[in-house]
Amino acid sequence: MSKKVVTVTILLIAAACVLPFVVSNYRTFQLTLVLVYAIALLGLNILTGYNGQISLGHGAFYAIGAYTAAMLMDQAGMPYWATIPIAGAVCLLAGFLFGLPALRLEGLYLALATFALAVSMPPILKSHLLERWSGGVQGIVIVKPDPPAFLADVGIKLNPDQWLYYFALAIALVLFVIGWNLIYGRIGRALIAIRDHHTAAEAMGINTALYKSLAFGVSAMYTGIAGALGAIAVQFVAPDSFTVFLSITLLVGIVVGGLASLSGAIYGALFIQFVPNIADELSKAAPWAVFGIFLIGFVYLMPTGVAGAMRALLGRLGRGKLSPPKEALP
Amino acid sequence: MEAVLFQVLAGLATGGIYASLALALVMIYQATHLVNFAQGEMAMFATYIAWSLLNAGVPYWAAFLLTVAFAFVFGVLIERIVIRPVENAPVLAVVVVFIGLLVILNSVAGWIFSYTIKSFPSPFPAALGIRYMSPHQVGALAVTLVVLALLYVFFRFTPLGLAMRAAAQNPVSSRLVGIRVGWMLALGWGLAAAVGAVAGMMVAPIVYLDPNMMSGILLYAFAAALLGGIDSPGGAVLGGLVVGVLENLLGAFVIGNELKLVVALVLITGVLLVRPSGFFGSVQVSRV
Image (cartoon, rainbow over all chains, first blue to last red; front, side):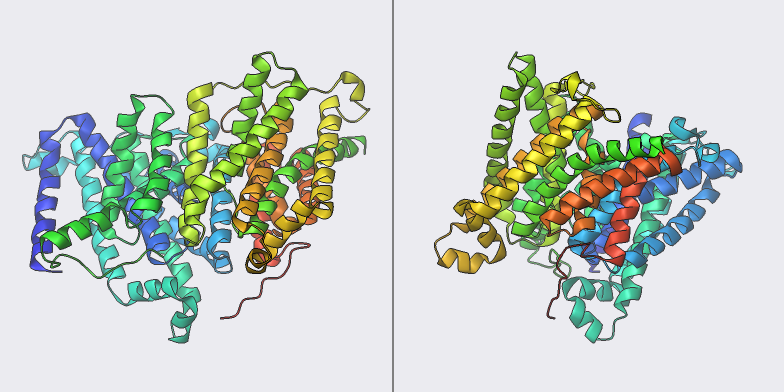
């Protein structure tokens, strides 16, 4: 990373820390959801953007994470923070297991299988077999966590919304740093090589089966952690919040934000959180019409997404100093 | 035993509808090697057109034909305007465009016609019913079979059908002998949309009309098309009937109605893993 990028990143993090004191509680809540989406989009981007495996079913992993957290809090009385790593681990396993059969499926067929997974998730969650733990159609209500007592002891007064925001921000930062290391290291190069030329990657000695299923697992883990955080922030899980349209929302996020781009996850998250709110004023159906138009429009006109456009813009302004390695659309 | 027979026949009736939609998917797959994720929403939109026509006082069969004609033109237009620019794009781009189309059609239908669930009439007289099947089930099965027969005759015995098959099988040579391959693709999209519209109008009296009515049906159609072999029209029809019967039997006797959709998920992943070419599909061999 160049010095400029480091400075800009630090400034952005500082701004993110100040935000909850400047905006209303409701806005803080919305910004928490932006962080949640950013984590989920980063997960999907690792799989679809960097590894080239199309998933139309990441909403299912988001749901698994959300339900794991909610059930642990509701049934086992676990504290909210302890459910996050468990949700991550459950989704890592679920993703890895789904990734194994996905090894045999390429492109279109993987899209089909994951689409089927997304469509059949709500009926599975509603099923009477799970009703004892999942609350069936009604779902589960969870209580909003209070800021920990030690903060008040040292004189920092936060309301629950602000605390949850900082909690999500901390987790997001950790996950983004891990993601950065993953992508710009040996593993990331292997993932990109598999995406760009499967056979050549294999010939160079990359264990494609292991890396592909691992990408699936890690991607599901990110999305699952996001799901758990999202459930805690919204304080409610129900089968109908995890329809196929959630998966499509995540797809919109990575396409608009920018495929194969870390910063794209943040642009995408801002887009999927705030654009529907604006479009909603037009009609109940408008947000989806806008999403659809943006999806097709971005494929035609801006295939590298907002992140790609920003890169080109900054590259032009800063004589190319800011542009990281070139990343192509898979 | 009687209960089983009842479920099998009911399954055949819905299976016929899955078969039509699966056939629409296969027609587009054969020509372009793409699976149209928006096929269900296109059918749903056409069904809303039929509903509007019926509400305006048009007699059922006239509305039926007008809707099929509308769906055909609509399909051709979508191919020409939306799909053509991404004809040679990577798979991900095309899938994203299909999903975009799905979302747009879904929300526009919700916008224009509202999300409230509407009932849709069945045109078949009560006299059509037999002991084990309702009039609508008999009628829907008959209509499906007629559509399939018409398609068979069209592709097998008309010059245009031959040209379309040629364009799908070998675009380069077809172009050399003077077939307009691009337009053949567009016609294929039109036909697929028209067949889908028939499926939509046949299924609407059963599942009721709302913008999300096709999501489950589309999943069964995917399962049917894959089971029969994604590039085999006959396989798609057989697959549709098998999926319909299987879904009904499992739903009634084994796993309960609420988990019916999971049957489709298991079938889709199962077929893709065990036998990706389905019953009758051709095995794909690629040189690396």
